[in-house]
Image (cartoon, rainbow, N blue to C red; front, side):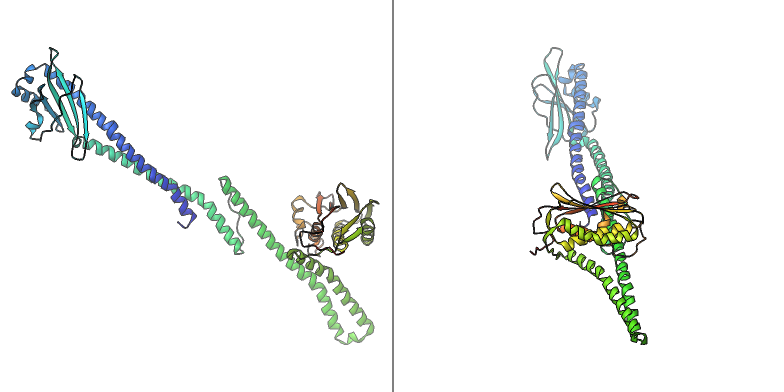
Length: 475
């Protein structure tokens, strides 16, 4: 009983195994008492009535014992039926038991009236059916009594036939019910066992094929959830491998350049002051170029560990954004993009971490400039809306398809459709969203493939200083 399959089988068969035998016993009882015994009793009553009518045609039967014995011998009742003729006072005239040598069954006293009386005795020592019929003569007086007795042994063959029939039907039903119970239990357990095996394989790191979706509804939901889990884990594993390859690639390029420069410096060419200065400058640029990558990884690690700290201060949002956008404006113009900025001059002073919020805005602007082709446009808008402040970054780039608008915020995600920019780890939008969330705001995306993307940062005007990722305020 340790397996689900075994318990399903028992749960299907056990109720049937308990109910069907009880039903069989009840059917046997009904057969014996309501059908067989009733049928035997009716037959005895009809036979007694016929014998009574014949006896009325021979009045001497009731007065002469020899005539009585001859009458009984002529009738020859069935071997399992005892025929008795008695006088009105109960004295025995003749009995078929005397003629056949069978022990005589004592009859009860004569009943009152002229209606037949049926007595059924079902005891441990005596089991029989007795029919007593008073015989009324032509003068309307009682002339005698006819008694027909049939013991249970006489109807045993019929009872045993009924019992065997009911037992055979019950056994057949049990067999069919057991087979159906096993089939249904196995069918019900099969998708669950398959789901368990799939989850176990996933836990061991193996790839699995999707589970076949089957009814009922709960099993279908379970199978769909397991398939979704398997798909999610495969995606995460692929993402992990891609991220590792990206990290190796991003760190390998500058480290390779540094190694080459160090090798040159160790040779005679490094004695030349101009060459040495050029190589050292290249090494410094390579190391400086790795710093943002290391900062992103450190920031992502801090977010995962829950140790991110915000150094909040009161910031004039209009002046701060104007300063932040200058650098990105130069990059956009250099690429040949149109640059549009619409800032509400009445933007309030907000309590934020300018460095971390600047990183979030910078990541959005970096992606907008990177993915917008020359001749396109990037538009930055900031205004107060309702109880919050909205900073919008819109571009006219290729846009993001609907299937990728959710995963695009996940760490190390790289679009399968856009591979023109292999550089980077795919952390920009992840970090931007986490930074905005740390400030109590939200980052939303609206995009149509081929028509550009629209990112909106919404910050609350009154954000409590205690944040859900252990943010700290430094006045």
